[in-house]
Image (tube, rainbow, N blue to C red):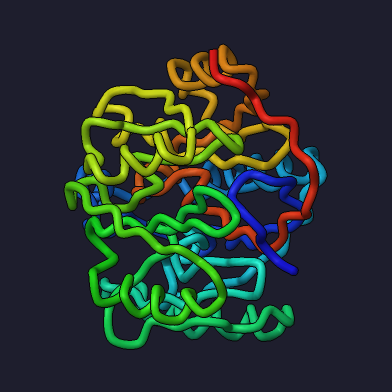
Amino acid sequence: MFVINGTSKLTKVLLSPPEYLISPTPINEISKIYAGQPLDRDKMQKEYQNLVEAYRAAGVEVIEAKGNEATTNAVFARDFGGCIKEGYILGRFKKSIREQEREMYAAKMQALGVPKVAEVKNGYFEGGDFAFLDEKTIAIGQIDRTNATGINEIREQLTPLGYDVHAVPANPDYLHLDMCFNLVAPKIAIAYLEGLPQSFIALLKEKKIDVITGSEALIYKHGYNVQAIGDNRVLSLAQNSEMNLKMREKGLTVIEVEITELLKAGGGIHCMTFPLKRVAELEAEVTAG
């Protein structure tokens, strides 16, 4: 058993150090701002280690996938696919600069003994668009890097396994679903609600998921790009003061991580993390109020 949902206790993750990230490539609205500017590589490495240490301190095993000159954006390990209880879903990158990551991560998953249970071959799907709502309900953003064809391919392969897959269209400027929505506890999410379709908002209400809301501006500051690690704990950016406070007011434990330089390439903590294992447990749900 690998990843049973999006909020139970996280015990193993896959990360990739930013060894070959030199300058942001203008492939999203954030990286366009810094495109062509050299990144501080020492600072990025320190920030990456901050994340590694935060995971280890929380009892999470960190597995690393080493990139190369052709996989400059591999630090955003989330995007090659998704992981469910039975194994992993291999996505398909839309941007050519990221194509070689697909083979790199597929080889890593094979080496780790994680079976491939689904694959996108014709459409596009990136893992930043993948989100559990509960153990059998999956939301997939249809935003910039994932299209209807890719979502339908996933739906066809996961439906026989008992999963219910929902497409979530949104403004392409938002890049991925994890930039504007994340489940942080079994019944609590953070999101820019005004940017999400009414059908998805209705689904959240049906699932009795309480949503902590914020501004559209927070999307571009990675304010929603956090990682739930179980036991009502969340990894978030240290500078994400507004959303961190709101999460704490709901009873969540927020672990702050210092990352600023890596953000210039367009991804945050959630983007950098591919969950490999979440253990089954009876989690105490944080109640709304």
